[in-house]
Image 1 (cartoon, one colour):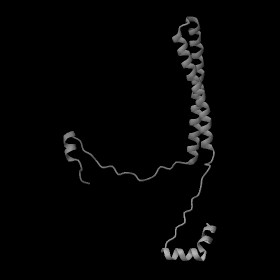
Image 2 (cartoon, helix red, strand yellow; image 1 turned 45 degrees about the horizontal axis):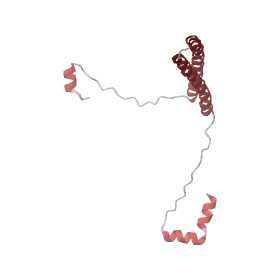
Image 3 (tube, helix red, strand yellow; image 1 turned 180 degrees about the vertical axis):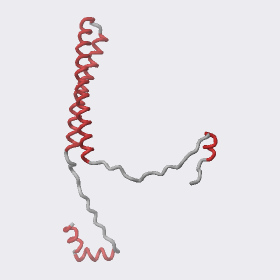
Image 4 (spheres, helix red, strand yellow; image 1 turned 120 degrees about the horizontal axis):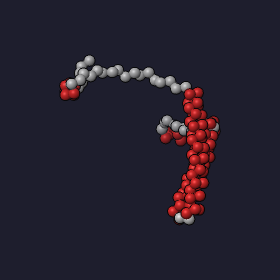
Length: 140
């Protein structure tokens, strides 16, 4: 093959080769995808539980500090930390909901059938007068 970038090769003092692109598709098994989903779900759940546990420890510590010091900023930090732990527990519920959505089959799939008439307006009016068009609509 011819060299497509001779100036670039010369300036960088290198030689390039053209690598053919492989057109083979990577096969992904559906069981692999399901296993990955389950692993990801379990990992996410485990991490969220750890975050809630650590957050609860932090809340206990900051509440103790806030009560001892009586400082308003300590109580503000405590309230923000409590909100953060509550948000993490909400994420656990959201994770459950998302996993159920992934496991359940798609609901509400609809089929749309579009009928198309190819012909002139004279032919269409003739069919309407004969009542053939109504029969076609009933069968669809």
